[in-house]
Length: 331
View 1: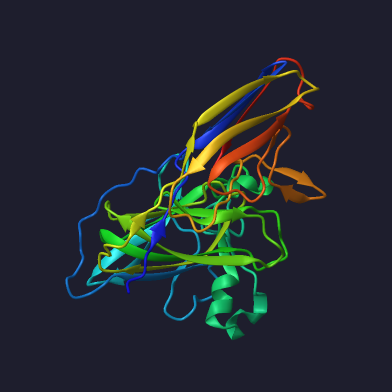
View 2: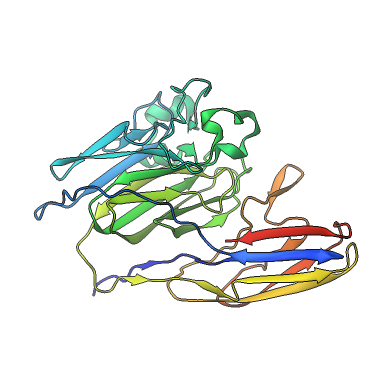
C-alpha cells in the first residue's frame, strides 16, 4: 500500500488590535518568497538527490553531504542527474544573495556553528548532522546588528520540478534555549514552532511539489531559529499525495477595551486537513522572563495545545495606556 504524504501551511495570519481605551488587532497570513525558474535537467533514468549539512567552514561535512557555511546563493553547487545545481543564502528583505559566512567583511566568525568542538571528527554522522547549524535569523542577535549576518536570511536550492521528499533538521545541540525553532519548505510548515530544551533538535520528513525549479527554506515564525541539515530526494508522482492547507475564519479580528482594566477574548476557527501537529506563534514578538523566551507578549495569550476547531485568544489592556494600540500577527 502506498504511503500517504501530507503538506500543510497556515495560510492566514490572525491579526488583533486594542484602542478606545486601547485597541487590539490580530491577523493571519504568510508571505511566499518569489523565485526564478531554471531549465529542467531531470533525467528519465535518474532521480535527483541532494544532501547538505549546515555548519561552520572549519570542519568537513559528514560523508556523502555537501557543506554549507553561509555563502550567498550561487557560490556553491551540487552535481546530480548529469547537471549542476546551485544553492545558498538570500536576504529575506531584498531577496538578493547574501554572504552570512565569516568570509564576508565584518561578519566575525559567521553564522555557522559546530557545537561538538574537538569531538567532531570522532562523532558519528548523525551526531555531526545534529551538532552543527546555521542561524536563519541573525537579526535576532544583538551583537550582529549592522553586519551582513545580522539580517534574516532564507535558503534556496535548484531542483527539478516535481515531487520531492525533504528531510529537515532544526535545533541546537548546545545548552542554549534562546530560540523558537521552526521552518517552512515551499511555504509549508514542516516543523511546528517549538521553544527548545537544552540540546534539543528535531527532524521531520515531508513531501512537497515544486513547479519553479527552486526549493525554498525559510524561518517564518521562528526566533533565532537554527537549521542543521537537509536531505532532498526526487520521487515519482504519487496520486495519494495530499496538499493539506489550514485556514482561519475569520482571518482578522479587532477589539476595543478600557485601558488598564478589562480583559477580553478574540476567537477564530481553524480548519483544514493534513497537519500532523499544530503550533501557533506570534511573529517576532518575544518576551523574556529570567532570560527564558516566552511564547506570549504583553496583551495577547495563545491557546494551549491548539487543534482544529474554535481557538480562543485571551487579550487584556492592563499594560496599555488610554489611546494605546497593539497589533500582532499569529502564524
